[in-house]
Length: 151
Image (cartoon, rainbow, N blue to C red; front, side, top):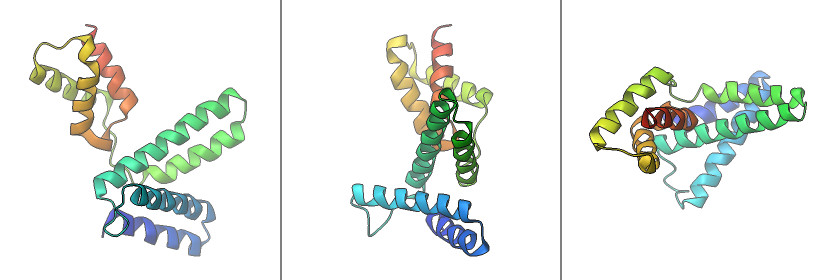
């Protein structure tokens, strides 16, 4: 069963089982997937698993940004709601790598590229993201790359 089918089944089970919050969160995710399929003109064949992973990671990132804004404005109740949505969505993401694992991969990429300068930071980040996919947070990758290049 593909990830999209799993999401659909989990959404139905949550709504029928009385877990309205989880069901609504998954319904919103399914709507985001549908929007992306339409935008990419892939409505008939659907998105690939890797694309769905990226989309889920993007949805989690949006919610983290919302949490930061809500906390700045002392709206802890709304921030908690966003955190609950993140907890639901994280179940469908691959296991996130630790900063040490990311650092190891960054070292490998830099070694493979040869003599790398700060001006090539974007290229290094892109290469690492390409290899790790949604298993690593882009902000952590950027932080690690910057640390490695400033040594």
